[in-house]
Amino acid sequence: MDYMKLAQQMSEKSHCLSRKVGAVLVSNDTYYATYNQVKGCLSSCGKEGQCLRRKLGIPSGERLELCRIVHAETAAIIESLWQGINTVGSVLYVTDTPCNICAHIIVTVGIKKVIYKGDYPGNGLDVLRQGGVEVEQYRETDPVIIENPDEGMPE
Image 1 (cartoon, rainbow, N blue to C red):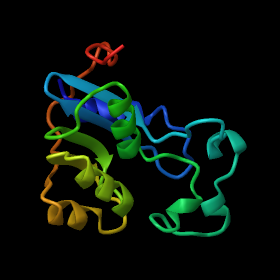
Image 2: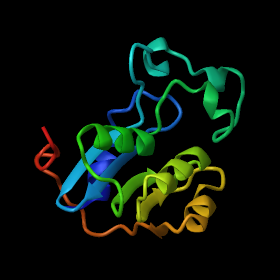
Image 3: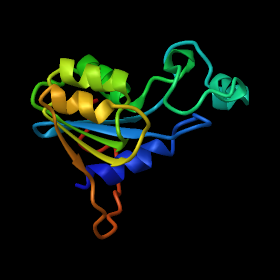
């Protein structure tokens, strides 16, 4: 399975007005796929019709604490742990390089490798490397269509 293609498909579900990001955490024969999203009772900026960071003119990658969205990497980690999936030694596929905050979380939970496609501002890749996480930029191959993206995910 091409997990990056799945991450890209998941990113399309995001309601974020600034950046749609997907992530797939793979541990042994199990994976969990998700996207950047609002958790709990908050409403997303997409549903509100405006992004507070955009409204205030804050550049991408800055003042992330103002964002309502949980980044895809962090959502994948949290949801995997909820499902009992062990993150130690796992591989994370993400459509953009992790931000600094997500990179610290990735190192902390023991993910061994991050495969990313696009760039995101900040020093997330440096944090990952310093934390002993292998990083690799995804290279496009022939298109793969994933018939059933939920197949193989825990119930």
